[in-house]
Amino acid sequence: MQPLSDRREEIVRQKRETPALEFAGFWRRLAAFLIDIFSLAVICSVILLTFAPYNWFGFDGLWGSSDVFDEPLWRALPYLIAGNLLSLLVNITYFVAFWVWRGQTPGKMLLGIKLVCQDASKITIGVALLRYLGYIVSAAVLFIGFIWIAFDSRKQGFHDKMAETYVVRIPEAPITAPVTKASVGG
Image 1 (cartoon, rainbow, N blue to C red):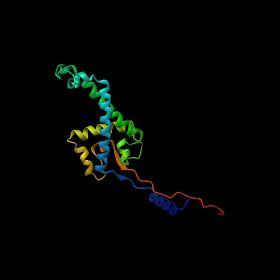
Image 2: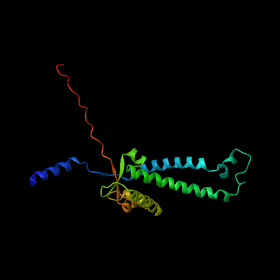
Image 3: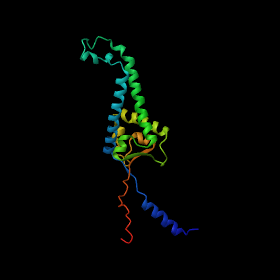
Image 4: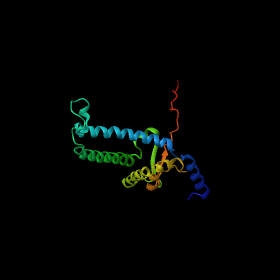
C-alpha cells in the first residue's frame, strides 16, 4: 500500500496538470448566440420559402400585375401558423441536438466555448430541453435572464441555473515542437 504522503503528492500533481475551466463571458456567449441565430434564420428562411405558397404573401405583386391585397389575409393564416411551428421545431432541434451531441452549437464551436453540466456528466436530452425552456424564460423577462450572465460570478444565465449547466472556455492545447530524430552516423 502506498504511504499517505505519496498519495497526497500524486493528488497535488494531478491537480496541477488538470487545467482549471474558465467560465465563458457575456460577450463571447452573445457572439456565439448571434452566429447560431443567423444560421437558424438562413435555415428557416430556406425551409419556409421552399414550402410556402409565396404568392399568398404578396411576393408576386411586386413584379406581376396583381395587387398585394388581392388575396384575403386569412387564407395565409394556416401557412403562417404552420411556418412558425416549423421554425420553432427547427430551433428546438438545432439547439437540443447540438447540445446533446457535442455540448456545442456551431457558434460555440467557432468561439471555443462548450456547455457542461455542473456535475461533469454528459448533457442529456432532458437537460437540453430544460435549458431551451430556460431560454424562453430568460427572454420573457425583458432578456434579464441573458443579461444576468454579465453579473453572475459563474457567468450563468437563468437558463443555466434552471438546467444546472455552465458554459466554459475550451482550454487551448499547449503548442509543442515536433519530435525529430537525429540522423545516426550522419
